[in-house]
Amino acid sequence: MALTFRSTIPERVMFLHQDCYGQAQLVEATRPDGERDWAITQSIPNGQTWEAKYSGDVGLYDAITEFANSHRNDFIASRGNDHRPRQVMRRDYNMVVDEGGNVRAPTITGRYDR
Image (spheres, rainbow, N blue to C red):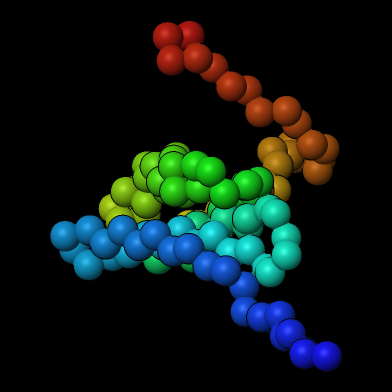
């Protein structure tokens, strides 16, 4: 009886887009042996990643390029920020209080309500 060994290395398809400034946008599709679904992951230099699933083999390259193009604007915006991680604004917990320490609602007037 002959022994047959299955590979434990997943099948991998990679799409690398490098712009004229040298920054790279990587889209990688991996599929473990014996499975049908592809796990597609895209990453850009500022650390943002996106994930998707794709089923089947037909049209995989089209799905990869469409996934790369769907986040193209994020890549361009990240390049404008020198690929630093995106800053998340923290909530402002400051409140307006009167002389007695009671919380007052702020008076917000419109631009032309003077």
